[in-house]
Length: 213
Image (cartoon, rainbow, N blue to C red; front, side, top):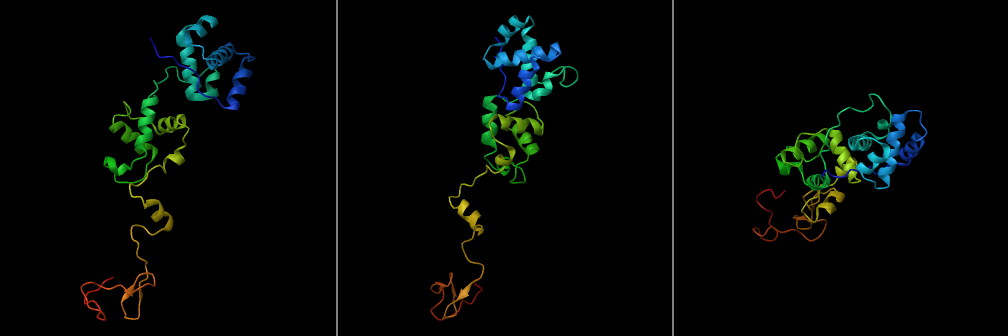
């Protein structure tokens, strides 16, 4: 038994276009709009096909076309391809993509810490998340199905260092020392104007023989 297919969530503009299509002069547009509205009521493909006196594959094609191309699928002609590609990302693969983008590309041997759509597609394929190398747009659509924009996804990577966020916001990097080292009365360098820092290998009042900076 084939997996049921339903219309995706539609925007207000798409909803208006679908309802308006019921009065369109084109029988193609009218039938597709009937299919989409029936699917919104959670009616399966075969009952829709029986009601409209068409094949259930026609119903499935209409739903696939709209889910991928939106309102362009309501028009006859060359607005959609005759053979639609099988969807690559199901719920499990989208979850795997979500987890993938929470890691650094360097974890997968890539020479960068920043994700791009093309790099995400490459690594997802290498890790077996997708059965083939997909396009940038396919990655973007998969994230959109998770209600996540690519702009947000690029900032998902986190560090295991608990102080990472504080360091990043303070702009101090990995070092907690101030850039300018002050000296106390003894002539020794101090931390942020506090007590003199003493080199444990030197006696009080003597400067280190090696450059401590």
